[in-house]
Length: 178
Image (cartoon, rainbow, N blue to C red; front, side, top):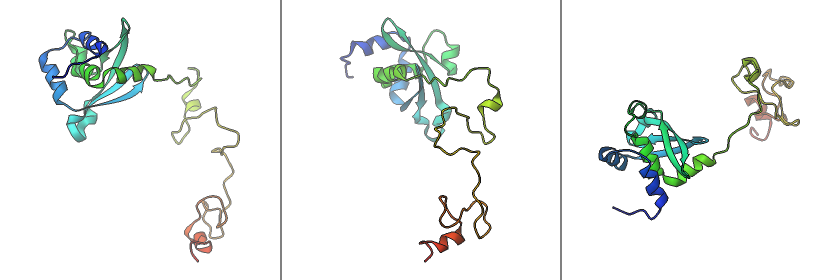
């Protein structure tokens, strides 16, 4: 076994309560970590291969006496067993380590500036896209005038010299078809 030079990693593990069986499973299995929000890491057991998405859980991080420690997990093992910490928290502390924990804490929060009094219609467009108030003045909007149909009658084509992708007939009239 290799020894850790960092006292911080030893201390993080000391903050968790787990047995030898959990320790072995963490060592045997493959793990993936994704920062999914401030103080949150998605821990995935990649040993499940194509089914790994079914074995992915969010682990919350908290600070205890200056140490970043995996505090809670949404898996059933952590929710229903108050005595021992789950393997996802142990994997985050040992395999992910202080670098992943610090990255989750450093994850910026996003201030959307929206109030909670907005209605659903104010937040979403009919196509499912979100409405934003920070659209630059020079960017196209969804309410822009539709281009006129090309000579071939295609409503979505604005001709061989237009700005958008032309229809096949208009394309033949430009450099592509000659």
